[in-house]
Image (cartoon, rainbow, N blue to C red; front, side, top):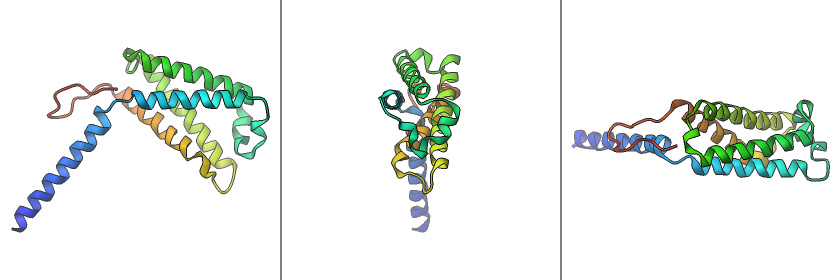
Length: 159
């Protein structure tokens, strides 16, 4: 009886692991790229909007590196490139796509870490940006690793 229960638990753990691997490596990343692109366009337009966004202390580290307008332009260019790479799927795993994914992940992580370190307590309002940083990092991992086949999978992974 106990051996039967243990086998059932083992089967469920294996099924759970296979499902997690399928979600991580077979799922479409297009919606993630689209979300990143939209966020980058929103950041770009928001920073180019008339007014002084960087007067707020949360942006002090970003301001040390570039002006508000330059950050806005950078985000608009990044959003455009993100969208183009999303549309042209052959770029997902090409060297240029991997290089862009690394740059994009670095951009989001710099923005998030700099905002978290600029003010105390950490701003809860940037939790979405933290999710974007993790998403961009995962795209970099997926882009750099290429396409995988899971054991027992009938098709190649999607990007």
